[in-house]
Image (tube, rainbow, N blue to C red; front, side, top):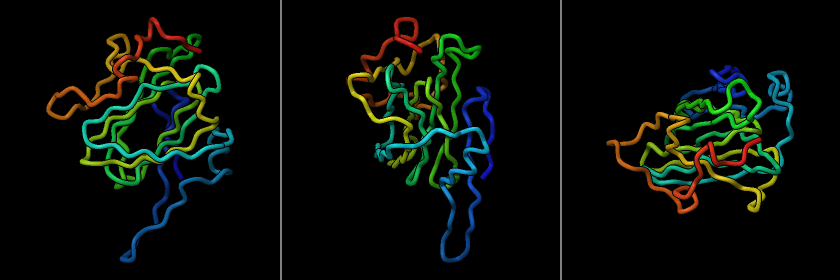
Amino acid sequence: MQFIKQEIQDVLLCQPTVFQDERGFFLESYKKTAFSNAGISEEFVQDNHSRSKQGVLRGLHYQIQNPQGKLVRVIVGEIFDAAVDIRKNSPTFGKWVGVHLSAENKNMLWVPPGFAHGFYTLSPWAEILYKTTDYYAPQSERTIKWNDPAIGIKWPLIDAQEPILSQKDADGKLLSQAEVY
């Protein structure tokens, strides 16, 4: 496994070693010692599975109490995955990192606690698996507007069309109005 620091150093792109032949492939998607050696020592307590159709944007989500670190991977299709630093005392507060994750590239993104997270579905369908370091706490969940100009995420919107949003995501707050860490 290779761990590649992103522009925000706490966010890591995780590239597994893939063993492939005519039968298919094998990879280790998680190995505690490898992740600990890369500085990710948090314990994962919950696995989630999400399926979204093309054009769906989910996020930018976080929990103000019970902050979750997330290890995100795609097993079907492709997404653009984004993490925003919302730790007010961080030198990278309000900055974002975005990567393409797909079933084909098999990469994963480590989104540490203290970040808002979201993704946009590029393929006809995408299935995302992600591990979390704390349990889902709906009373603590918050949403930052996906298109907040102060953050300026460059979402690769298909044909520049507005994404498909849940009501919760459409009602997200601007970073300047949001509760942050």
